[in-house]
Length: 218
Ligand SMILES: Cc1cc2nc3c(=O)[nH]c(=O)nc-3n(C[C@H](O)[C@H](O)[C@H](O)COP(=O)(O)O)c2cc1C
View 1 (cartoon, rainbow, N blue to C red):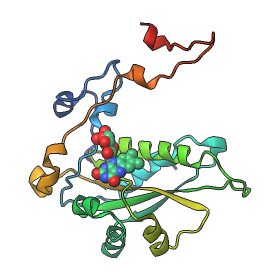
View 2 (view 1 turned 45 degrees about the vertical axis):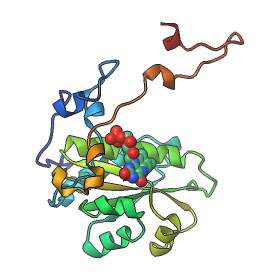
View 3 (view 1 turned 90 degrees about the horizontal axis):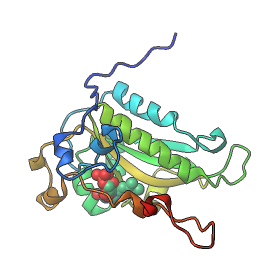
């Protein structure tokens, strides 16, 4: 029988959070979840249950991938010794705040297909998996923040990462903490940021020699 996980603290995310609307306004009415997810650096001293952690990773499991290769792989540091090992390869500025996140997940991917051929989509697909993690975490009332600032070579050596595995980012996961728990040098940035206008992300297609995107014509 398939059982549905029922973690506590599920947020319906049906409205834009007041904190977010101070800096984020959608141009089109997307689901509030997309704006409500942002990346705080403050983490509360509150453990993440295995049920919640597994629910977050389950969301990644269902991400789309090229030929359904599911290239994403995760190193999950939750125990003290694992957490300390991860901290040892974070860049110092990131370690300053990530030390308080109860869970650190190193997002990796298998860069070859099951048949041994290179998988050109491994990073793209794994990015989709990370997005699923971030959104599912938010739905459960947790924060995430990705960390690209870590020592790749040190991480590879310490974790004995084989050549067919690429490393992407460490994800800090946990419940949000008080601002006071964060190093003062981060206080100013501890709020949702914004985005450039959508039209600036749409590239023109030069059908008649000259490209103009539909959004630019409006
Ligand atoms: C791949 C990746 C690497 C990142 N690396 C870092 C990092 O090293 N340190 C950090 O504080 N934030 C890092 N971030 C967080 C981004 O700065 C943040 O996601 C971005 O400013 C958008 O803000 P939002 O997530 O709050 O919407 C990273 C994000 C991604 C996706």
